[in-house]
Image (tube, rainbow, N blue to C red):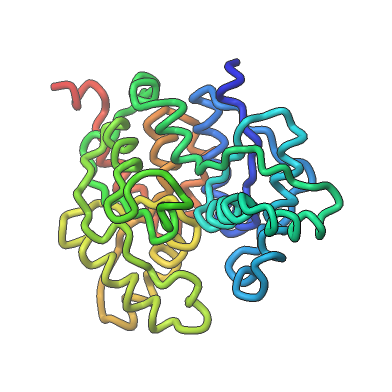
Length: 298
């Protein structure tokens, strides 16, 4: 196994709860593509959305603790599937490039963080470290026959000076993966527009309006499904779809996959490992549209 494809892995809190389907399908796909994910021992919450609004040093320390643990694992990179975790880990590392800030952070930790590792999303590692050719070679059931709208959300590639991957306004990394898997990928113009983020409890009206706009355009463009890489985006678009329908008097019925779930389907992985049954808007009708390889080749 190539050490270049061995990573410290940070699943994040949602990966063990609300986005368990993202977590399981990520591990399954990475394993199938020869990537080794070594869980960071005794990892803790990165601070999620609230911590940085209170104290930047404390917020960075929460992430730096996990980075320091990863530094003891003999790897070069830390991977996480969650854009929110990715933002916190990368922002902490970016701010710790300043010695004074790094000193303040390390004063809060039992073991200092050297800030020596590269942090990537799983999406970035698939594109840059695995590559499209290897992904395409591994496909056993091409996603022929379905149209998908790739939706990145507003966190994955922003701010660009910190995230340092793909285009902040028109990212294409997930598009390229889905194309390599055989799907018909729509040029979705709202791919980085906000879905309402974490306003699901405090301002449901905001989520209904913004997520409804995304679902409406995807449907009008002929999408069979929306595909995302963010647990919060997936929740707003999938779990809240019935609320959106009720408030906007709509009839949306669009499955909202994690890209790793569709990747797992294309790679021929065991459906039970992808937790497709966890999706609120059931995906079976869309999955049945996928043509058998023999038919797709005609």
